[in-house]
Image (cartoon, rainbow over all chains, first blue to last red):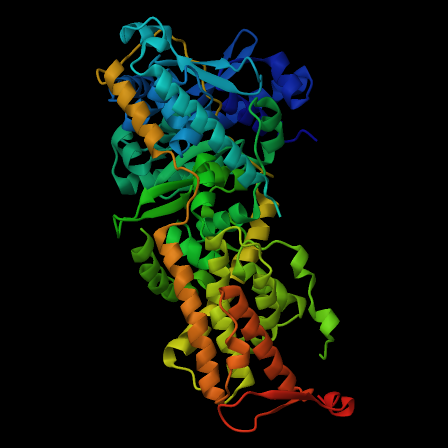
Length: 189
Length: 189
Length: 250
C-alpha cells in the first residue's frame, strides 16, 4: 500500500518548503509514526549525494539545499535582491497600490497575463505582503506593505495622485473582465 | 571540477522554486550550455521514480511534484483550481500544445473563427504565454506555459498523448498553413 | 443512401456551433462519410440552411460561416454540373477547404485527449514561501508619479468589449459580392435566366435562399424527381413533377 511512502513524503516536503512535524506528516500521507520514520530513513538514503538534503530538527523535518552549496545559494540570494525590478513587477505593484490590495486573479485580469512570478519578486523585497482574503479564505490578497507606503511618502493609498479616478477604472475593468472570462470558461459545450 | 553539476543545479532549482532558463542556470553554476544540458539529463535520470520531477519547456526548466501525487497535494493547497475549459479554449489549447507555439493567425485558420478573446482568457489564466515572433516582430506567438504542462501532467510537450504522430500530421499540413496565415496576418495585425 | 426530406432537416439546428468547421464536420460525420468533395457536396444544403437560420447577432461570427459557404456552393455546383469549368483559384479554394477540414478534424481528436487529461494529474510547483519580512528593498523607480503612470498605462491597455474590426466588416461585404458573382457564374454556365429567382433577392439572406433553392432544384433534376424545361435560352425555367415511378429509380 504505502510502498512508495518516501516519494510521497518527498513530494509533500518539496511542495511545502518549510518544516513539518513527523506527526503532521503522518496525517498528510495517512501513515503511522513507525512507517513515517522508516520512510524518512529511506528518503535520507536516496538523497545521499544529491543537491537536496533532509533536515531534521527535534521532531520536525524539511527539505533544504545541500550544505556544500550554501555559499552558491547565498550569492544567488544577494544577486536576486539587488537586481532591478522588471517593468512587469513595477506595473503589478502599481495595480496593487491603486486597488489597495488585489488577488492574483484581479491582477491577471487587468494585465492580461499571469503574474505569479512578478508577485513573488515583489514579496521577496518586502514591497507587498500576502494575506488571506477576509471575504474568501481560499484565496490570497496582496497589499502594499507599510514600509512601501512610507517609502513613497504617503500615509494611505488614497493620497496617491489621481487615486479616485484610477481606482475606479481599475476596479470596474477587473469586475468586467472577470465576468467575461467566467463566461468564457463556463461555455462548455 | 563540475563533476556534481547536476546536484548544484538541483539545489538552485529547489531554492528558486520557479522556472529558470538553461542560459541563466549556466551563469549561476558557471558552466557552459553543453555541460548544463548534460547535467540536466543526469538529474532527470536521478529523479526517475521519485517524488519530484523536472519539467522542461522551450529553454526553461523547473522542479515540481510528481504527477502521481496530484490529489494529495491538491488537498494540501489552499487555492481553488479551475478545471473548466470551454470548447473554444480546448481547441485553442490543443493547437498551441501540439504545434508547440502558434500565432493568432495560425489558430484562427485552423479553427475557422476568430480566437482573440479566447487567447486573452487563456493568457489571463496563465495557461498560455505570448512572445514576439522571432521571425516577424510585428506578430506574437502563443506558447504553452509551465502551468499548462503541469495541468496536463506532462514533463514536456513530448509526453503528450500521440505527440509525435500528431506533430507529423500537422507539419504535413503546415506548408499550406504558413502560406495562408501570411496573407491573413498581414491583413489583421 | 436515399434519405427522405424529413430526415434531412437535421438535429444540428439544436446545437450551437462555434464555427463553420464544427458544423461541417458534424454534418459529414452524421452521414458517416469521409471528408472529400462528394461528401461536402452532399452536406451543402444543410449547411446553408443552418447558416441562414443563425441569429444575426454577431456579423463577424456569421462571416466566418459565409466564407466557407461560398466554397461549398462551388463544390455543389461542380457536382451537379459536371460541365462547369472551375478556375485554378476555385480549384485551390476547394482543395484548401478539404485540407483545413481534415486539420480541424485532427485537432478535434486532439482536444478530446486534452480534455481527458487536463487537471487529472497535476504537477505542482512549490507553494509560495512565506516571507520573513525582515528585508525591505525598494527600487528608486518607485515613486508616486511613476506608480500613477504604470497604473494608467495598465488601465489603458485593457481591451474594451470586442468590436468588429474594419477588416472583418470588409470581409462581410466582399462575401456578398462573392455570392452575387457565384450566382451569375452558375447562371452563365447553365445559360438559364435566373431573374424570377434572383430578381427579388436583395439582402444576403435572400440571396442565400435563392442559391439554396436553385441547388435543390438541380439536385432534384439529377435525381429525376422533377424535369426542368427551358423553352429557349435566356427564358425562365419551368419545372414539372415527374411520375413517382421514375423518381424511385435512383
